[in-house]
Image 1 (cartoon, one colour):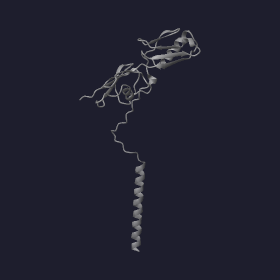
Image 2 (cartoon, helix red, strand yellow; image 1 turned 45 degrees about the vertical axis):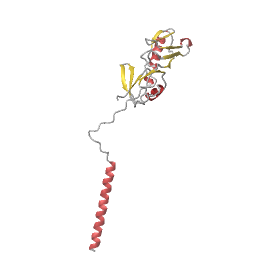
Image 3 (cartoon, helix red, strand yellow; image 1 turned 135 degrees about the horizontal axis):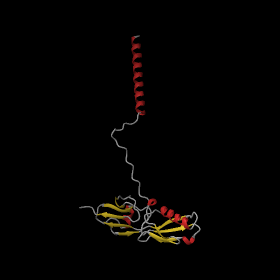
Image 4 (cartoon, helix red, strand yellow; image 1 turned 180 degrees about the vertical axis):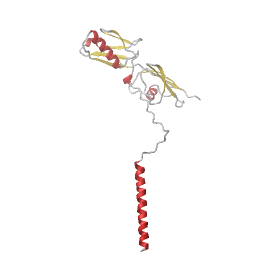
Length: 203
């Protein structure tokens, strides 16, 4: 009789212990993971450069067309002062504007004096070249290609000089705030007019 009582009590204790362990495990799974109180949130990556925001500059060639007005179609290279010349409008300042900004400017001038709600399109026919200088086999200027990055630009210039270890890359880029120096990597996007300087590593 006593043995049955003890066995029953032991079984109850075992059941209680198992239930407690299961409850603790469920609570642990539901709880939020521990985060160090001083941990800083991950920094947002810097968005890559894009041709959508590219500002025109001397050396770029554009084509301007006006729907229904073939005589106004103009294809020209921006001159040293960043201008193109169009029928009716004469000199049009284009440097410093994106293709969209230039389209809006031309449409506004035509609408003010000559046409009602003109439909203007601006296409960049040819971008100014990029320059790859320093420790490459063929330093010089190269025509801009879509989706160009440092790796492809260096390949256009014949690759790094034989015998050099992987050098440092600096990109000089003119923008609204003046010339910027950008630390380049093989996958860094290159924009028209960029000067890519390949520095020979110190020995």
